[in-house]
Image 1 (tube, rainbow, N blue to C red):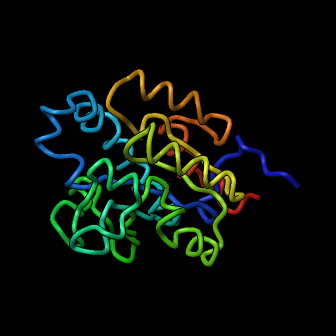
Image 2 (tube, helix red, strand yellow):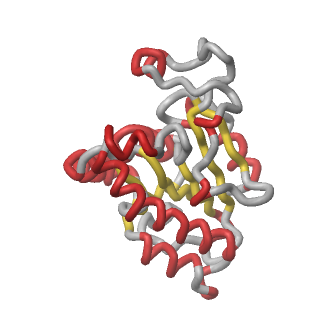
Length: 208
Protein backbone atom coordinates (compact mmCIF):
# COMPACT_ATOMS: atom_id res chain seq x y z
CA UNK A 1 0.00 0.00 0.00
CA UNK A 2 1.29 3.46 -0.91
CA UNK A 3 1.71 5.59 2.23
CA UNK A 4 -0.28 8.82 2.46
CA UNK A 5 2.05 11.79 2.03
CA UNK A 6 -0.12 13.88 4.36
CA UNK A 7 -0.42 11.26 7.11
CA UNK A 8 0.54 12.40 10.61
CA UNK A 9 4.05 11.69 11.83
CA UNK A 10 4.74 8.46 13.66
CA UNK A 11 7.74 9.20 15.92
CA UNK A 12 8.82 5.56 15.97
CA UNK A 13 9.38 5.71 12.19
CA UNK A 14 10.72 9.26 11.96
CA UNK A 15 14.13 10.93 11.85
CA UNK A 16 14.37 14.67 12.46
CA UNK A 17 17.31 15.81 10.35
CA UNK A 18 19.06 19.08 11.20
CA UNK A 19 21.22 20.25 8.30
CA UNK A 20 24.31 22.46 8.67
CA UNK A 21 23.22 24.51 11.70
CA UNK A 22 26.81 25.09 12.67
CA UNK A 23 29.05 27.87 13.92
CA UNK A 24 30.72 28.21 10.53
CA UNK A 25 27.39 29.11 8.89
CA UNK A 26 25.37 30.96 11.54
CA UNK A 27 27.66 33.48 13.26
CA UNK A 28 28.27 37.18 13.86
CA UNK A 29 29.83 37.63 10.42
CA UNK A 30 26.64 36.36 8.78
CA UNK A 31 24.64 39.13 10.46
CA UNK A 32 26.39 41.71 8.27
CA UNK A 33 27.08 39.63 5.18
CA UNK A 34 23.73 37.81 4.95
CA UNK A 35 21.24 39.88 6.95
CA UNK A 36 18.02 38.16 5.90
CA UNK A 37 19.48 34.71 6.43
CA UNK A 38 20.79 35.70 9.87
CA UNK A 39 17.55 37.32 11.05
CA UNK A 40 15.24 34.63 9.70
CA UNK A 41 17.44 31.91 11.18
CA UNK A 42 17.70 33.63 14.56
CA UNK A 43 14.04 34.65 14.86
CA UNK A 44 12.17 31.88 13.05
CA UNK A 45 14.05 28.82 11.83
CA UNK A 46 16.25 28.10 14.86
CA UNK A 47 13.46 28.49 17.44
CA UNK A 48 11.22 26.24 15.35
CA UNK A 49 13.93 23.62 14.94
CA UNK A 50 14.40 23.69 18.72
CA UNK A 51 10.68 23.09 19.22
CA UNK A 52 10.74 20.16 16.80
CA UNK A 53 13.76 18.67 18.55
CA UNK A 54 12.12 18.94 21.94
CA UNK A 55 8.92 17.32 20.69
CA UNK A 56 10.81 14.65 18.77
CA UNK A 57 13.02 13.73 21.72
CA UNK A 58 10.03 13.47 24.03
CA UNK A 59 8.20 11.28 21.52
CA UNK A 60 11.13 8.98 20.75
CA UNK A 61 11.98 10.15 17.22
CA UNK A 62 15.58 9.80 16.03
CA UNK A 63 17.54 13.07 15.94
CA UNK A 64 20.37 13.32 13.41
CA UNK A 65 22.58 16.27 12.51
CA UNK A 66 24.82 17.04 9.57
CA UNK A 67 27.63 19.57 9.53
CA UNK A 68 29.80 20.67 6.65
CA UNK A 69 33.17 19.21 7.61
CA UNK A 70 35.98 17.92 5.46
CA UNK A 71 37.62 14.65 6.43
CA UNK A 72 41.05 16.02 5.52
CA UNK A 73 42.84 19.16 6.68
CA UNK A 74 43.20 20.56 3.16
CA UNK A 75 39.69 19.52 2.07
CA UNK A 76 40.83 17.39 -0.83
CA UNK A 77 37.94 14.98 -0.15
CA UNK A 78 35.27 17.66 -0.78
CA UNK A 79 32.86 17.59 -3.67
CA UNK A 80 33.74 19.65 -6.74
CA UNK A 81 30.92 22.07 -5.89
CA UNK A 82 32.28 22.65 -2.39
CA UNK A 83 35.76 23.21 -3.80
CA UNK A 84 34.50 25.71 -6.34
CA UNK A 85 32.39 27.63 -3.81
CA UNK A 86 35.06 27.53 -1.12
CA UNK A 87 33.17 25.50 1.48
CA UNK A 88 35.84 23.97 3.68
CA UNK A 89 35.81 23.50 7.42
CA UNK A 90 38.67 21.28 8.63
CA UNK A 91 37.76 18.27 10.77
CA UNK A 92 37.03 19.11 14.43
CA UNK A 93 37.42 22.85 13.80
CA UNK A 94 35.26 25.36 15.67
CA UNK A 95 33.27 26.00 12.49
CA UNK A 96 32.00 22.42 12.47
CA UNK A 97 30.27 22.66 15.87
CA UNK A 98 26.49 22.65 15.96
CA UNK A 99 25.27 25.99 17.31
CA UNK A 100 24.60 26.04 21.05
CA UNK A 101 20.88 26.72 20.60
CA UNK A 102 20.48 23.35 18.87
CA UNK A 103 23.20 21.34 20.56
CA UNK A 104 23.00 17.58 20.04
CA UNK A 105 21.81 15.50 22.93
CA UNK A 106 23.39 12.39 24.36
CA UNK A 107 23.66 9.56 21.83
CA UNK A 108 22.51 11.68 18.87
CA UNK A 109 24.46 11.31 15.64
CA UNK A 110 26.37 14.14 13.96
CA UNK A 111 27.48 13.29 10.42
CA UNK A 112 30.17 15.29 8.59
CA UNK A 113 29.28 15.91 4.97
CA UNK A 114 31.03 17.37 1.95
CA UNK A 115 28.16 17.62 -0.54
CA UNK A 116 24.80 19.38 -0.70
CA UNK A 117 22.82 16.19 -0.18
CA UNK A 118 23.99 14.07 2.72
CA UNK A 119 22.88 11.00 0.75
CA UNK A 120 25.95 11.51 -1.44
CA UNK A 121 28.71 11.94 1.16
CA UNK A 122 27.56 10.18 4.34
CA UNK A 123 26.17 6.78 5.34
CA UNK A 124 22.88 8.37 6.46
CA UNK A 125 20.72 6.08 4.32
CA UNK A 126 22.46 2.99 5.69
CA UNK A 127 21.96 4.22 9.24
CA UNK A 128 18.28 5.02 9.05
CA UNK A 129 17.50 1.78 7.23
CA UNK A 130 19.31 -0.08 10.03
CA UNK A 131 17.20 1.77 12.59
CA UNK A 132 14.03 0.99 10.63
CA UNK A 133 12.90 4.51 9.74
CA UNK A 134 11.00 5.58 6.66
CA UNK A 135 10.12 9.24 7.33
CA UNK A 136 12.59 12.14 7.34
CA UNK A 137 11.75 15.62 8.61
CA UNK A 138 14.27 17.95 6.96
CA UNK A 139 15.23 21.21 8.72
CA UNK A 140 18.14 23.64 8.68
CA UNK A 141 20.14 25.59 6.09
CA UNK A 142 19.72 26.45 3.19
CA UNK A 143 16.23 25.94 1.79
CA UNK A 144 17.28 26.23 -1.85
CA UNK A 145 20.50 24.28 -1.55
CA UNK A 146 21.06 21.44 0.92
CA UNK A 147 17.41 21.18 1.98
CA UNK A 148 16.20 21.04 -1.63
CA UNK A 149 18.82 18.48 -2.70
CA UNK A 150 18.21 16.26 0.33
CA UNK A 151 14.43 16.27 -0.09
CA UNK A 152 14.68 15.25 -3.73
CA UNK A 153 17.29 12.56 -3.12
CA UNK A 154 15.36 11.11 -0.20
CA UNK A 155 12.14 10.93 -2.19
CA UNK A 156 13.91 9.12 -5.03
CA UNK A 157 15.26 6.59 -2.52
CA UNK A 158 11.80 5.74 -1.25
CA UNK A 159 11.63 7.79 1.95
CA UNK A 160 8.68 9.87 3.01
CA UNK A 161 10.12 13.37 3.13
CA UNK A 162 8.64 16.16 5.25
CA UNK A 163 9.75 19.81 5.18
CA UNK A 164 8.66 22.19 7.94
CA UNK A 165 8.49 25.38 5.91
CA UNK A 166 9.30 27.62 8.89
CA UNK A 167 12.19 25.51 10.20
CA UNK A 168 14.53 26.23 7.31
CA UNK A 169 15.74 29.40 5.61
CA UNK A 170 18.02 30.92 2.99
CA UNK A 171 19.41 34.28 1.89
CA UNK A 172 16.19 35.97 0.70
CA UNK A 173 12.44 35.42 1.16
CA UNK A 174 12.11 35.00 -2.60
CA UNK A 175 14.68 32.22 -2.73
CA UNK A 176 12.98 30.47 0.17
CA UNK A 177 9.55 30.58 -1.44
CA UNK A 178 10.83 29.57 -4.88
CA UNK A 179 12.60 26.57 -3.40
CA UNK A 180 9.55 25.41 -1.47
CA UNK A 181 7.47 25.69 -4.63
CA UNK A 182 10.07 23.83 -6.70
CA UNK A 183 10.38 20.77 -4.43
CA UNK A 184 6.85 20.57 -3.05
CA UNK A 185 6.13 17.62 -5.32
CA UNK A 186 8.78 15.56 -3.50
CA UNK A 187 7.61 16.01 0.07
CA UNK A 188 4.93 16.98 2.51
CA UNK A 189 5.20 20.63 3.51
CA UNK A 190 3.77 21.74 6.85
CA UNK A 191 4.26 24.27 9.61
CA UNK A 192 6.17 23.55 12.78
CA UNK A 193 3.04 23.93 14.92
CA UNK A 194 1.29 21.16 12.99
CA UNK A 195 4.22 18.76 13.22
CA UNK A 196 4.82 19.42 16.92
CA UNK A 197 1.17 18.68 17.59
CA UNK A 198 1.48 15.35 15.76
CA UNK A 199 4.65 14.39 17.60
CA UNK A 200 3.12 15.16 20.97
CA UNK A 201 -0.24 13.49 20.34
CA UNK A 202 -0.30 10.06 22.09
CA UNK A 203 -2.88 8.66 19.69
CA UNK A 204 -0.45 9.12 16.77
CA UNK A 205 2.18 6.81 18.18
CA UNK A 206 2.28 3.42 16.61
CA UNK A 207 -0.20 4.33 13.83
CA UNK A 208 0.64 2.85 10.47
